[in-house]
Image (tube, rainbow, N blue to C red):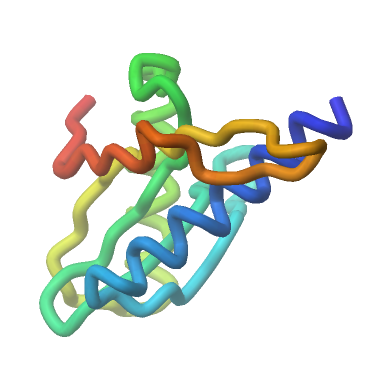
Length: 116
């Protein structure tokens, strides 16, 4: 379990850095509203993204996506944000390199505009 957390956290760190390189500013990580949660919130001048980091993307269930929509709505309401919202999934492929997480050859897969 400890190793899974370490690798999960590393995957989120890698995804956040990737999004920053793509021109987004990360404004929140692991944002909770009650029992619902979003891994990363980031934005550029036009859009605000609610991002789940998971592998494979098929592991992001319909229920998880519904919860992300609820989280996004609550966040937008509370922050009065008027940017165009989008829900994305980022798959981060990590390998174990002597006990430390490292990006594998498969890298990152960014799936945009995921719908319920």
